[in-house]
Image (cartoon, rainbow, N blue to C red; front, side, top):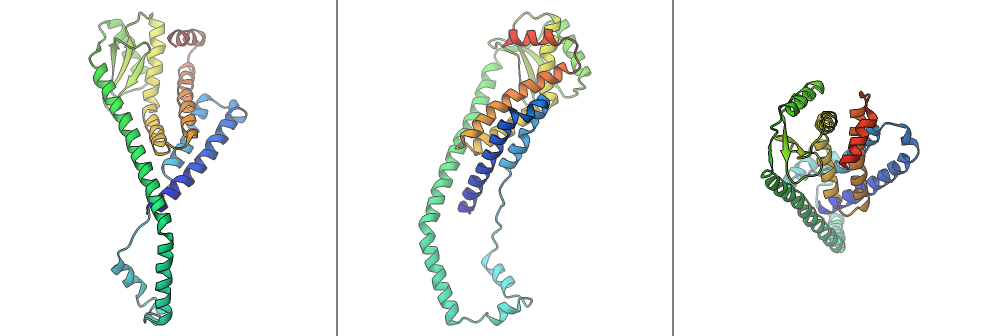
Amino acid sequence: MMEIFIKNLLYASIVGSIEIMSIIVLKTTLLKRYTCAFNYYIWLAVIFKMITPFKIPIYIPEKISYIFQHSPNNVKTIIESGISLSESMKIKNNANIITANYPIENYFIILFYIWLIVSIILLSYHIISYIIFNNKIKHFIYDVPDSEIRNIYSKLLVEMNIKRKISLKLCWGISTPLGIGIFNSHILIPCVSYDNQELKYILKHELMHYKRHDMIYKILLLITVTVYWFNPLVYIMYKIVSNDCELSCDEAVLKKSNMKENYMHQLLLIL
C-alpha cells in the first residue's frame, strides 16, 4: 500500500509540475488578456488535481477472496481448484518474486515515512504558528470606539450582501489591515488615522476576501504545499497565487468604483 501511495504521489507531483509550468508560461502570454480573477481561480484546477490524485486500494480478506475465486460462476477456478505440481511451482516462483522485490518494498516504506514525518512537522508548524499568533494578537485588539467608522462598516456589510458575522477591531502592533479566523472572523485595522474614503476602500478590500472565501482557498493551497513539500514548484505556485489573490481582490473592489486612482493611491500608501 505504501508503494502504491508513493508512486501515486510522485506521479501527481510530476503532472502538477507540468501544469504549474504551463500556467506560468501562459500567464506571460495568453492569460494576460483575461481578468485577474480568472488568473487567480485557474490555479484551483491544479490544486484540486494535486490533492485528490489517489486511488485508495481496497483489500479483501483472504477467506472472502477465496470464496469469490471459487464461486460456482467461476467454472475455470473450480476445474483448476485442485493442487497440482504446476501450481506448486507457481507458488514457489511467486515466493521468489516477493523475496526479490522485498528490498524495493523497504525502499518505498522508508520514503513513505520520511514524507509522512516532514508533512506532519510542516502541518504542525503552521497550526501552532497560527494558534500562537492568535493568542498574542488577542491582547492587542479592542472594539472600535468611533461610531462613524462602525457606521461605514455596517453599510459596507449591507452593500456587499455579507450576512455572516465579521467583527471589526482595532489592533496595536500591525501596520496593514488583515482578516483572521474562519468561524470567529475579525477584520483588524491598525491604529492609524484614515479619512472616510480611505477607510471605506480598505474595509471593502478585506471584506471581499471573506465574500470570495479566500480563506478556504488558502487552506487548500497550504495543504498542497504540505503534501508536496519536496516539490520546489509548489512554493512558486504558492507565491503566485498569493499575489493573484490580492490583485483579483483589488480588481473586484474597483469593478463598480469610479475612484480607481484614489484607491490605488491608498494601496500604495498601505504597502
